Length: 72
Image 1: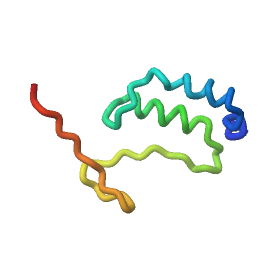
Image 2: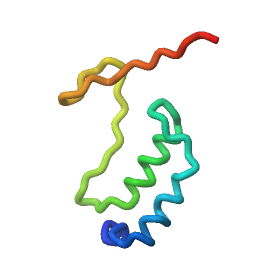
Image 3: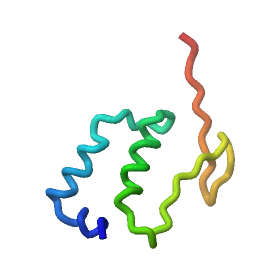
């Protein structure tokens, strides 16, 4: 299983280099790529999924934040 592959620090370094140079802020497309890379190493039994929610939607005990960028 790939999850055991991650237990070795050398192998973890290899996996991290897959997404190290991606732009990983919450509102970026590269964050989805990063999550997909991480998910590819999870076992099927983990039922790993990536959810997308509208701003201000309550999800569990969290509320999805709404980013407001200042005008230039």
